[in-house]
Image 1: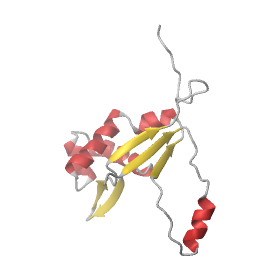
Image 2 (image 1 turned 135 degrees about the horizontal axis):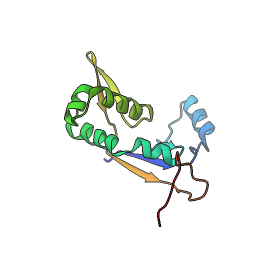
Image 3 (image 1 turned 120 degrees about the horizontal axis):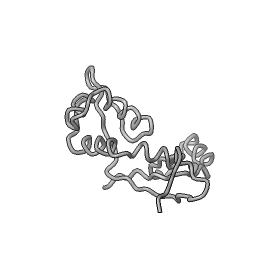
Length: 135
């Protein structure tokens, strides 16, 4: 079974029905699981999180299952402090988990694929800086 992380850009999470679901859980009722979702607030944040260096880290984690951040840094041929910073950013957004592995932290990914959805508005877009378009 494929586990998918659904990501939306520039939208607020849909919390409709949350109170009913929490009430059902409190009452001991069975509740259908919902797909895992991550809502990213802006296109600028999306671009920062999914820049090529971070995508390379995600790919290396899935492909090699490193035992530590240091091993991950070696796999992608980058300095450990830089990789540590990127790994913590990815963990802050829930894209990876860090498991205690002795004295090290082991980066893991719980999903098999990422699905992106959402609209990208061309007016009033928060892109995190000046944008210029050459003719």
